[in-house]
Picture 1 (tube, rainbow, N blue to C red):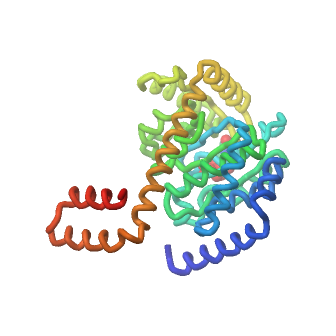
Picture 2 (cartoon, rainbow, N blue to C red):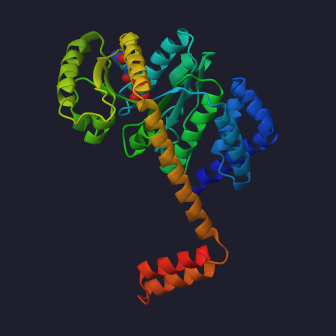
Length: 345
Ligand code: GDP
């Protein structure tokens, strides 16, 4: 990041943090539990804050929100830029809110700190949803690392659930590791594709297809319908080549036109079928427990690392050990064990 951008980012963070200070955790929690959007937005800003002095408040808020135990259907949506993710979310989100569902839209965007937000950064891309009283649209958090962004998204899900959102759509770009991260925090993973473009063209890796619970061929309208039908058959055939999923779910291929809002009934029916089945056979809760276990382990790891490297009694030893390693005087393996021993004393 350029120095000017960094400076600007820290200025924005300061302004945001000052805004947070005016309200207490109790006020934020009270508003969130009543489903109030300004408090939810402020709560997420607090969660996203990188100022160490905000961490305690953020943790307190998170703990309170976790106690509400509302649940939602968490749906991940991926696909290369241009495939129509925002148009689909706008269209499908509106379809859901018209049914009276409360829908939250979050994003995990590894490119946001570099390109200043390629997804959801520009809210005008979801004009109808942004104005929809049953929808809450949150642009991508500006994080320094993908890990940081994903942690914040995971915590934002908890806040949205506490605010009573029944369906949470999490958008990510089909590049890098962001799909794996989003996959680790959702119940259902949707992959958007275009007809007539090869996998290489669409930049989709094999692993992403393996993660998908459904593939949606988007832009199935006008002259494209024929190609979309062909792509549907091809993908359906290709999916058979993948090993069956542990939960017994068989991934399906659907056709949608996000612009014409066609095919959305099929998407909703499929989601309902998935949630009914996986709630019935216990896989939904099993998957969530697995995700929470990983989340716990990651936090444990981060906390231990943080405490180790910030421990004032170890600073000198760490620096000296590094010097010795540079001169090949000690083994990195043995030195690590020695320092951990000292840390645990
Ligand atoms: P994203 O980068 O994946 O979020 O893609 P966008 O939602 O921004 O869409 C990229 C372009 O595809 C835009 O010009 C959309 O208008 C267009 N688009 C999206 N969905 C459809 C669709 O269902 N049919 C057609 N014909 N165009 C679409």
